[in-house]
Length: 133
Ligand code: THU
Image (cartoon, rainbow, N blue to C red):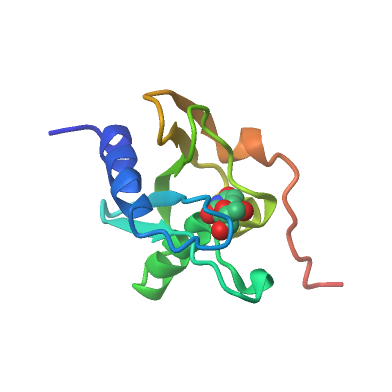
């Protein structure tokens, strides 16, 4: 049985094939593992009204949440080119809604390079809403 890191990276590469990115041409795939072991895919979905675009990471997390998941064990992201790229700030904020920390595997479509990092490292100062104020 392959480990979860290997499986997530493989699944994120497959999810990337679903990317709808006619405006930027920048195709991204993501795969997030819920703590029960189920893996959910995401790809970026662009729109002619550019601000309506959703990133691959948020599509993966929102798909999982819509399936009843709120607890995650890791995420993999595959971006174009030879060098892996981190998720954007908005996606990091969305991940931080559900995770205190999370392993993040950053892979590249054009190479076998993978950067193993974490939500804490990428986003040490996340916003939390203080509802007592
Ligand atoms: N994109 C992602 O899917 N994830 C990120 O973390 C950063 C950017 C997408 C959004 C847009 O479709 C394209 O990449 C270029 O910004």
